[in-house]
Image (cartoon, rainbow, N blue to C red):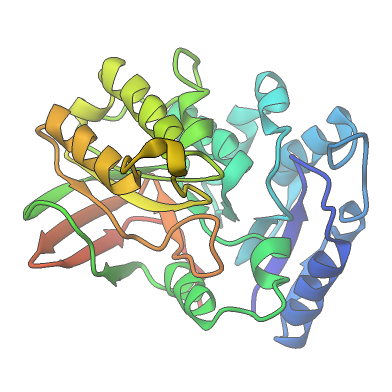
Length: 304
């Protein structure tokens, strides 16, 4: 069994019942859950004051033992406020022995990318306490893919993707699109050549997704990758004004600008069904005839 250590560096968890349900499920499964007192913490829209939320991250350097899963309670906004004050070197040193398995997505992406950019620390883009483990019904797909990533030195994720036939290898990186774009020009954006860039987002209209992708394109980031994989873009439905412009036509436009293969359809992001991916690990991507497979290795995992 694992020990889950909770952190809340971002927004206040407005759905307290979901968070508590997530804790109850983990306890019933035989796991330990530490740092539960942060769940009701609140300062305005944030999950506590900035010193409190910063301590959630910096105190990880003193979390002892093996097989510790660090899980964000939820996303929202707030992690960007902390970037200047995070003890990056201390966290990197902590990861050299019995590394923490740090998991989250959404707003948490900026901390994950900072760790990767500054010290090549691998973290997991995956489920969080309230939205996933505390959902009314715990999704079996999400749970299976979470433990697949946590327990295996090498694992694969398969889906029915769309895009050009390709075989690519490189360092897997990415996460939430808006958060990644917010780091352009900062020290916390990884400078990865020939990587496999995986992106997702929520509540962004297709034209906003396009605008952010074009920013990555104009910054030269997209063209330096070996492949781009698009996850879910929840709440991205077009409206009457769009007159046929949709997420699909937007992707076609991005593909027309790039020589890099863009593969869609991965279940990653703000959905009840989401895979778990170690950002910074080594990955190979094969896409042919509507089938896609990512094979990933080199990440920390739970030792028996």
